[in-house]
Image 1 (cartoon, rainbow, N blue to C red):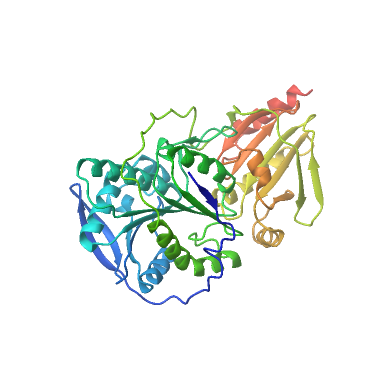
Image 2: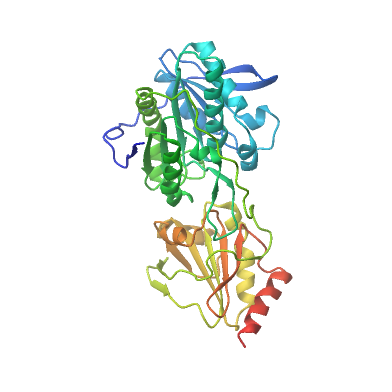
Length: 424
């Protein structure tokens, strides 16, 4: 297998932004496996058809904008929200649970309706039903072989986790990650929380034999995330239709295997989901050292966490649960005033100006350190935000929390005070 990292590739370089034009969608109903799937079809006269599977949270104006431009440039787009069509909750759990039947049937239906080569696209956890659908389509071709009309898959900041593990543990990847052998183009947002998992993803795809190309989008949290309005993201959004077109043409030139790889049995996750309370920590109990700057540019270094209870909170201003738990962290710090306690707040992959502006809007009563490139978060094996580590007086991590909780809850205060008492 060949893995080609396209950080500043000639393939995608020198792309000029193009103005978006109106190319309205037509509503299309596709009967698939006794279900009516609602599709937003953006018709075009060009050679290729792109099936865009929306992730668990549905689509938005950026999806529409990009689809319109692709259609104007000659790429037909079928935009489908599987969760909505199947009357399922719009959650990441829904996307993790969907098998490949509907996507496989969509591939066949789109080709039958258009006669065009088909490329699939999705982002985040939408990658799971898409890759499962590709494998299901391959299995169907074994029984009824036809001309190979599937070009491959385009994925943005994909998540291939079966479950979110307990804080500090390595993610459990879905078996489809290592059973995919079709050509894949990956676009990875440089500031998204899973940025430093990209190498692991490539390793899993390598097992399956996929020919993979990848491109990191510097300075981007989420190119289709409407809350990310940074200059880097808006610039990337303008270029994305051309990037997708070039990716389609690249995938088209690479043969797609019709024979699928064997699918390994699913290994059960040891512990999963988001936490609602302090959980005993199950990863490496020795915390990494850190040396970061605060919002004023002053350096802060921690190599020794002994002698007090230390709470290390990783968060980001674009993360609603992170922001929601800040008031309770403020109250916790006030409650613990005068005790051997320290709160270390680490912002993930945002610049000082962004956080200074945020601090003008949201009251934060504790210093904020900046993990500008996300490497400290990666070294602590943080996968979701917020994530919080509670270190005891002996310098070992005692508790971990995946997600936001009420830090001034009586039970939390009791647990923290118990740790402090152990030091006396």
